[in-house]
Length: 405
Ligand code: TYM
Image (tube, rainbow, N blue to C red; front, side):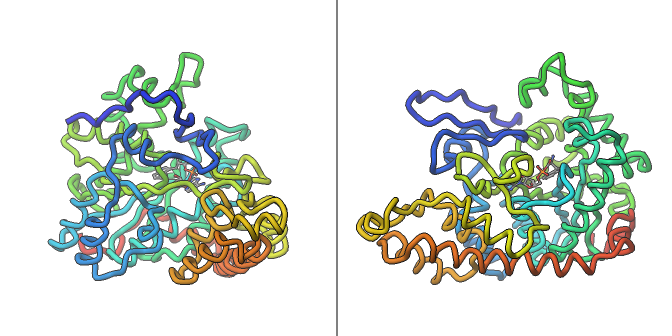
């Protein structure tokens, strides 16, 4: 059955929002309306019943990203849980478009969560580095510049703690030029998807470079297990689960439309919300705006200064007003960031209560966040220092992974 198409927005007074792989913008200071997005994209909300089933099947308390609705939407996650319960194989697929030498904290969200899923499910993972995409879209002089960024970012990704025997990270430029099986699947997708379809999904036009127009086939291809003969041999029927933020969903709506025509399985998806920009939830954290982002290369001092200087506050404009009316956690960026990274549910609830009532000031809230972020990023930086070129090459070598499938 064809995927549900995006619905035109009927209601006129609602804030405007655009969510696609290149833009996340809304006029609402509370950020993207995710219920509306679920309706537009035709995905399903991860509800309490799904979380309960997750815990029953895996024996793990759901990750804080699940408990707090950060991973909030899915396509056919139920099938994956059924497979896990029946001890049947599947694999994880996620990716990164290496546009800058350092990733930012927003990019960490899918990788932290994917690492947790890899631990819980004990399955292989493929990570696509779309250096070709970034060469086509950005002002990068040569494909090699993009590929080097992919290598640098691969080290950031490895620092999230992925299992060295269960993880294959690949640069598209390197892998596609060496793997006929991958290229053949790309060709099959390219033959079945028309310009009209990609124009409808991605907004391409006649002036776009032809490389951009065919790129969606490249992001679709890792969803099919026989694109990785070193891992799965010729098996085309190992199901795939893709964790990503919901901006990537258009690629996979296309993939899910095309899969049955190739006799392949549709990938399942699990989508996250966006880690917002420092300046407020109207946009996502983005590497192209340096002041909107905290990078994995930022020093402890820089982290503190960025939070203190730029993190949008939902507090009162004077101390007296704040004490009287309290802070607004729905728009306060420091509080929003804590929902992503503060593990302790009770402490988070306490902060919310204290800040909303006006007993806790913005400065104290920011201090809490600075400690949490400095520790998170300090830890990743320490792990990254231990990732040598040999270790990176190991992760990026096509090879048999240690899995049961
Ligand atoms: P890229 O490099 O833009 O983003 C990498 C991953 O991070 C997610 N992401 C965010 N998540 C939360 N908050 C944010 N502010 C934020 N910004 C980015 C993205 O959704 C993505 O999951 N074309 C892709 C690379 C790719 C890919 C994939 C991603 C290839 N295959 C399969 C996911 C799944 C890209 O440029 O991602």
